[in-house]
Length: 169
Length: 169
Image: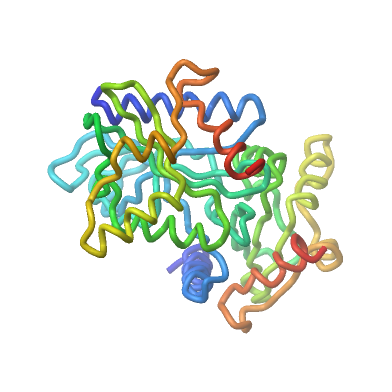
């Protein structure tokens, strides 16, 4: 398994735990595929379709939640080009509708996860568009993102942070 | 195009209009597919995967919205077996998280659409499970579902009904 798949598996287990406990309903969004040829239940020819959304979405206490999950081998920064522009645009549109929007970044070598709220992402994204740096430095993630480890009550226990930021903030 | 595809196309146009107007972000959820063999960007072998959700979801004013869309050639009833049990279960779980959950039914011969809130669906579903009738009669949809035509400001203009039921109700 590659690093991305490990994080995805950890997230899927986490979402299943939340679901079982009745805490949230969050699912991985399937990759859009254009089906070209089938035989019965088998697809013989298909192509990856343009992605218009991000990887995960669902509901927590009525609010829509949507996020993209990434792993990185970098140790000191999160490269903005790990998020595609159409994904950023999708987060923007959902944020404008008052959804809970963020990015989860797994720093593999540190075994640390940072929840980056859309607001913080937007700040760096706008700056990059204006010719500024193309990454968020770890030092700013430490200060302004929400850090947690993999040893919580779920492999990627992001929900307590979501509640703190969006429901108690 | 078959009837189901026509309704899907009408819904996709509607969602695009809502999106352009900044009124809601709702998308068709891709069909989950297990990819078995690829060559470059082409998928050579794949299979339909078990569905765990319903067809449409997104966000309106912060609230998660999720619904299944069906067309029927029946004129006097909506057959409950048009909704798979795992789809009903998914709506139940989202409803428990306070999402906006419903079914849209397009009665092709009448060119009428009914928005059936989860609550009404649940009532008939539970009754069917207890041995009762396996459909919702049109007469009860007329009374308790929310009916609209295809001549609104969008082909399937469900949003005004969502707002009336969930935001002003």
